[in-house]
Image (cartoon, rainbow, N blue to C red; front, side, top):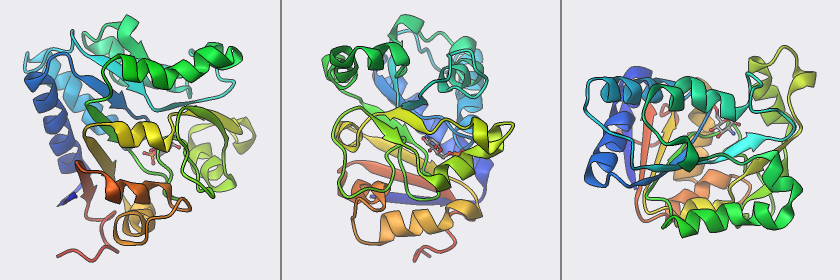
Amino acid sequence: MEFIVTKDYKSMSTLAAERIVEQVRENPRSVLGLATGSTPEGLYAELVAAYRVGDVDFAGITTFNLDEYCGLSPDHSQSYHYFMREHLISHVNIDEARAFIPNEELVNDRPAWETYSARMDAAGGVDLQLLGIGQNGHIGFNEPDDNFSKGCHIVELTESTIQANSRLFDSVDEVPRRAYTMGIGDIMKARRVILVASGDSKAESVRDSFFGPVTPRIPASILQFHHNICVIVDEAAAKLCPVG
Ligand code: GLP
């Protein structure tokens, strides 16, 4: 595990964006697993800037987003479809036909929904999976549980996630209670993982995930078993970690 502590949010974002740009330059047909949340906003801005100055070309890539709320239309300002358009897709030359995000249509038709994981496999598997982390150690929307999940599925969000994400909605009542997410198995199949975390509110989950026992009660802890993971955290998020 590569565990990198950066001075601040900006340098965390720059480093993560550089790694993604390198990945796409090395393999212009890369399959990227993408994440949402406040944490990757800075790195997406850096990817857009790199694209604008001609440092990277996204025309050949395929993307699979980790997760989406159930019941929000793609045009809802808090949907992850909207987020991806706002922060990345509409600013760069990603082919929208190859930008996949879990959605209702797939869930209403269960066999099709099960193919979200199969579709990732058919695309050759994810070359680089970007992750944020929840305050309770969730990745994607894989909440603390008795077991690690395998493929894409629907989850009931925990009260702590609903509270944490309510900051982005007008009221806590508007936060969807359920979400679609890639499974832990899907995430672990990625050839390479980059996890970013910033700020004091992530300090406990970063310590518990990367320096504690591996347990489905802290879903991100399974990443300790990934063969190619880079954790990039700023000083605030690393403050409880036993690192120099
Ligand atoms: C959400 C997303 C996660 C994300 C997490 C942290 O619940 N489903 O993928 O990593 O929140 O988000 P933030 O970066 O806003 O703290």
